[in-house]
Every structure is written in structure tokens, then in C-alpha cells.
Image (cartoon, rainbow, N blue to C red):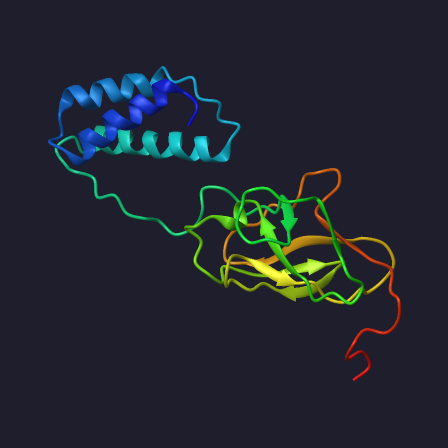
Length: 190
């Protein structure tokens, strides 16, 4: 969160909620939240502010009760694909990744699909040039580049997941740039 008032509000409200229900902490936290200067264009910041607002509303309705905080299913933000890499780990990838015409290269996904809180298997497939390809999770979410299906680059998009998906808003979405085919791929035509 970028707003210092929101961070202070979160601290005071969480102390009040999990501690002794101190009315001074509740009042200071609520005031700091009202005075917050957080940029809510980030879905994570907006979700954090909304959670704090729900906590304040709960306290208004039930001032003597201690809220029970639970880990809710889902994600604060939709899953996004922002890049591709041939290496596991790391936050950044390339928009265009070179792969051989016959495929076979492990391609690691970058973006909100890397969230450590996501259960393995929660992103089940991507499409590569419109063709569904399963996602594997050993070492991080990735897929094996399929053989070249047609001319030109193949756009990669999230296809099936347990959580909402937001498709790429980039002018040039992530894609595989296949090397020119130099002959038939091993195992082709079997």
C-alpha cells in the first residue's frame, strides 16, 4: 500500500481487532482510514482498503465483539499473464520468447499467476496460438511449448483457472516467436 495513512490505519485497526478492543485504537484507525491518500488504481490496494472498511463496519455494528478473521478463498486481483521466461523464478519475463519450431521448451509464466498463495494446479491451461496447452506446476507455473502450428508468432493467453482471469491489456500480448521449421519434428506424423 502506498498511503502512509492506510498503513497506519491497518496497524491500528488490526491491533484493535486482535488485541483488547481498545476504543482509542479503533478511533485512530478509523480516522486514519478516512484520511488515507492511497492510490486505489492498484487492485491490491483497493482490496486492502475495502477489507479495512469492512472491519470498521463490523466494529460499528458489534462494538463488543472480536472479529474472527478468516482466510477467504479467491484472490484480491484477477490472474494476469505479463510475460514469459525460459527460467523458473523471477518477477519479469519477455513479451516475446524465442522457441524452436518443434517446441519442447519449458515456458514459465510471469504475472499474478506466480502468487505463492495460489494452490498448485489453480491455473490449468493456457492457449498458444489458440491451441490449449496444460500448465504444470513443478518449479513454478509453466507449460511445454507445443510444435509450431502455423506461420507467425503464437499469442499465449491464460485459458482455464480456478480464479478470475484478466487477459493481457498490452498492445503486444505475450507470445512465442517460433524459429523457422527446418524439417519435420521428431515424432511428427505418428
